Structure formats: structure tokens, C-alpha cells
Amino acid sequence: MTTTIEAPAAPALRRGAARTRTRHALGRVLVTLARTVALFVPVFLVATFVTFALRSLSGLSPARIQLGEEATPEAIARVEAEWGLDRPFLVQYGDWFTGVLQGQLGTSWSNGADISTLIGLGLGVSLSIAAFALIIGVVVGFLLGTVAALRRTTWIDRAVTGFVTVISVMPAFVVGIVLVTVLAVGLNLFPSAGYVPAEQGIGPWLAHITLPAIALSFDVVADVARQLRGSLVAAYRENYVTGAVVRGLSPRRIFLRHVLRNGLGPVLATLGLKFPALVGASVVTEWIFGLQGFGRFANDAAQVGDVPAVQGVLVVSIVLVVTFNLIVNLVLARVTPASQRGV
Image (cartoon, helix red, strand yellow):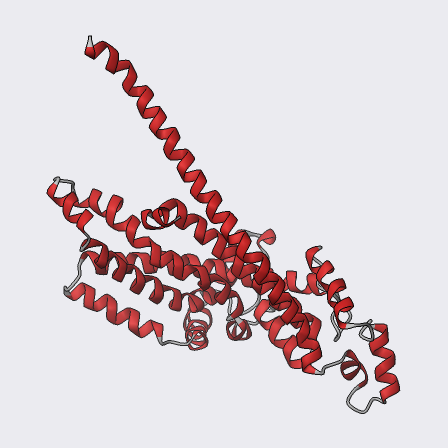
């Protein structure tokens, strides 16, 4: 009689437990999302206010760009009035911030073009390269870090550590020059410069972003490998791993279900800042490979004193950082048990 009651009840209990786990996982994701959004709003408000205040602090003016340093005070006042710079500061900030919320970042002082359009053109190039560099860095770094952790204290571990140390100090522009010299000019395997949008063909697009992505990926490879190796080695020392060994679980299951899941946290946290940094730090690489990307646009705008363009770059950078960190936090809340317990 006991068997008759419990047999059909077991699947129902499993389904109930599965639904409970799903609700808990969804709750953790929603809590993480709410916390990130609650943090993003005040940070965004303060950051945009400080960003807009840069124009007043810098003393720059569109009249200086358009009329030159010898412009008369009357001519400067006339140009600034045309740009609305004679209005109170808070009125200017309110109009600008309203435009930002609508995706309008203003007009360039240097050429009168729409800044949102200019940034969109350059951002597509930089995002393509940064995303590919991140993929290369994560895949290669994950493999190296895992091998080093599984073969810790052996010559393999020492070789991986030495290799990672070497590539971590190699500047991206030096790597880029070597790649162009060897793979593009010497072997003619890749184009040495230029960019082809993905809409014109995946093959040409990948061919043009591969070398700059490899040049940028070295730092990601080094950080991921070191972080993962350290966190995996630390996870192997935890009591729950010892308990799993005592219970007779296979090494493969121990690694995948216990060590790896708990060791991913520091790596994911590192990646939270890596992707935006790759987008912003690509200016030298873009020069080497003849690319007009986001980093080069920011550099050009800063050099000519185009304050609205610089403000637009800063706003987009803030959004990139917050968005990517939100994605990382959601993955952390879903994947790593440690972060789940902390929510």
C-alpha cells in the first residue's frame, strides 16, 4: 500500500521541486535586475550632469572652432547665441538631458553633423572588434586557465603561467604591428587595413576584424586565464569538493558541477569591465588598422575641442558599462551558486 501511494507521488514531487527552483531562480534574476537598475538611475543622473558641466569648466566654445582664436567678443557671443549657450546652465542641461533620453546626443561643433549618427557609425566598428576580441579572450583564457588548474604544480601549469605573464605585458599596438607585418603583409592571409560591414558579407567582415581583435584579446586572455586558474584551484580546496570525492563522484562531475560553477564568479566579474574597456581602448589599434571606430572618434573629438561629441562619447560609454555589467550580474545570479546565495 505504501508503494502504491508513493510511486505516483514521486513525479509530482519532482515537478513541484522543479517549479520551486524555477521560481527561486527567476526571483534572483529579478532582484538582481532591480538592484542594478536602482543603482544605474542615480549613477546615470550624476554622470550625465558632470559630463554636461565639462563644457562650462573647459571654457571651450564653438566660436573658437568656427572662427578661430582671433574672433572678436561680439562674434563669439553671436555664435554662442546661435547654439543656445547664452541660456542658463540648468536650462541647457535640461534640454540636453531630454535629448539624451530620446537618443539625441546633440550636434557636433566641428562639422554640424548629428552626433548620434557619427557615434553609431564608429560604434559598429568598435563593437564588432571588441566582441570578437572578448570571444577570443574568453575561449583561449578559459582553456589555458582550466588546463593550468587541472595540472596545477606541474610543468604545464608553470608553462601556462609564464605564457600568460608574457602576453599580459605586450601592448596591443605592438601586437598589431607584428600581426600586420607577418599575417597581412608577409603571408597575405588577412587585409592589413579597412573595415567591411557584416551586411556586405560575413567572410569579409571577419577577415577585416580578426587581426585587430587578436591584438586586443591578449589582455583578456591573460586576465581570464589567471582569474580562472586561481578560482578553480581555490574551489578544489573547499569542503564541498572533499565531500563530493568522499561520496565517490567522478572527477569530471566534480569539476563541472562543483568546481567550475563556483570558480566562474571572479572571471565573470572581471569581464564586467573588460568589454567596455575594449571598446574605449581600441583607439591605437584602430589607427594601426586604418579603422574609423568609436575610440578614434573620441580621440578626434577631444583633440579639436568638440565638447558635444565628447559628451556623447561619455554618455555612450556609461551606458555600455552599465549594460554589460547588468548582463554579467544576471549571468552570475543564474550560474554561480555563490552569487545565488548572496542575493
